[in-house]
Length: 27
Image (tube, rainbow, N blue to C red; front, top):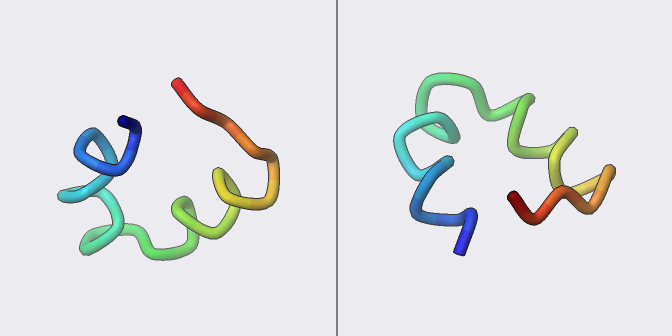
């Protein structure tokens, strides 16, 4: 799951998380 990969990123860059959710990226 990408959630674990962006777990630390979401805390540092919450904006990136929104962009990923909008783009629907499931890397």
